Image (cartoon, rainbow, N blue to C red; front, side, top):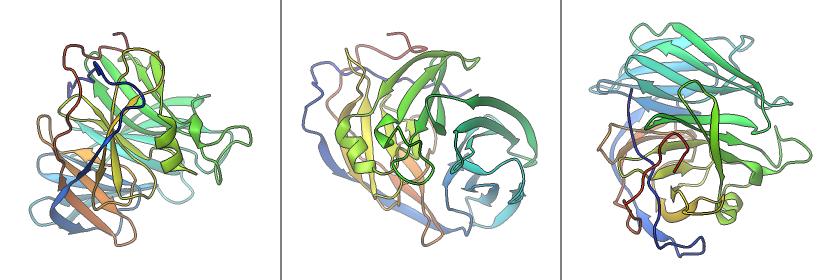
Length: 279
């Protein structure tokens, strides 16, 4: 299992001015299935589109395998996937149906066969959109929507980050800074992952910008450290590997997958780490 750390901030206040940064595109691939997100391992990338996962060679971009659950099957809206050893772990919801229900679906990344499922059922958090590992546990993003697929009494500002232990028992959670929720409106964070620096990175639904966030020393709101402009239309993404600042993103309108190098983000204190939701 990939082990990463989600770091504290030190002297930063929630109203600190976030950095404005720009990322660099390294390589571009074609994939007609790049609509919801992309996952990546050493040799392949996996384009995600609702009930489809398309496995491509990183060396050539060639499509080598494809899992298709069918438009009328039990898998309706896979938001994102990550590769954990040889398992593709995918965040799935019943969007745009309500009430919101979510599950984690697991696939063998070698054979592209479905091998397991963990259902959250109905949750107050909303629709799950992404997951990642942390040291000693798990972290996931949940979305609410101000328009299609939303509950009438909750807008997108109810989207949140939730922490769990390895058995998916909740250990804590965080709210997005109001300015980030406003920029993502009427949607929420469609993609998220812990970076090699221990910060949380998220993409919204359509803006070409990524937000670097840190855990606060006190209070429920994550700290917005930086906004990074990049060639992506929001949606789910994946870090290439631990210790690597390359991310894989999609451009859904053009059917593209891009490998992008993120700039370093400054302004946080490494004296504390995130462990199983308990500072």
